[in-house]
Length: 330
Ligand code: SF4
Image 1 (cartoon, rainbow, N blue to C red):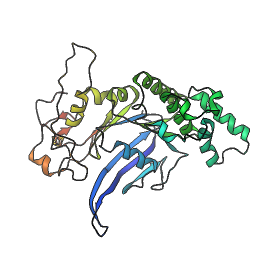
Image 2: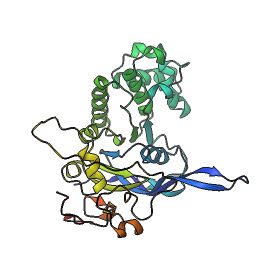
Image 3: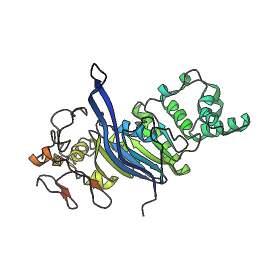
Image 4: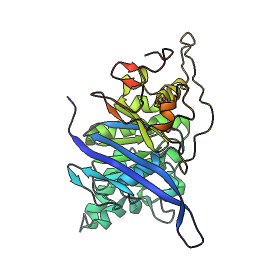
């Protein structure tokens, strides 16, 4: 049975002014996130995937309140969050480049203790320090390192410091924004395993934003696929990886290398670049690159259809699969 919804995102939009006229009027709008809806169930990991520039990170930053949404709402445990306000006691974020978000002039102990100070969690410095030591232990660092500075740590250790800081005031949801892509491959698995252990121990809920599809499969129970500011498919991980319905999901997954040389799967090549979110195509946003696009696709935007535990936005997908072309296998 599916756990209760902890976070619900409804029709979220984040548009940026890309250029203005001489008189300051907006002349072009970049629709980075354009009507995204999804929910996070308590204790799960939802992977959010798509090409770079598709709006994944902007979605995460708008959900957490770093950006004020242009439209749409975010609900936490049924309560609507104030738009554009950082609900840091409920939702925290782990960033791609841990070094960029750690103040180089602060000791690690003060970096981790800062959220405790901002929220006046402890009156007593000894209790505060005990919590800092506890957090360092929790992420696999030595409490004796609390007086050192960020530059004295490796990339993987700095990401652990970022995780400890994110956990300081016990948030329930963590948005992991490409948390391993800046790390050496040998370190990536360690950080992912740490995130998995913390999820079990602390009952955390993750939105895991990444472009490494193999890693997303490993860590996520459900996956949402994003293209040009919109979600195109959301499904349980194994259903999505074994039977992708949306032509974009099929193309994206066909690019994952397979270790078994006997299992030769056909790679679907997408023609052309990702169109600009300033001037997205009419109709289906994927129509300029979709091998199955029809006239209808170029004029009518597909709605997100709900098939029980999966959702898909394509005119030619129904509960039995992709119908438009016989060449698409399920
Ligand atoms: Fe392709 Fe048309 Fe489906 Fe869009 S609606 S994914 S263009 S078949």
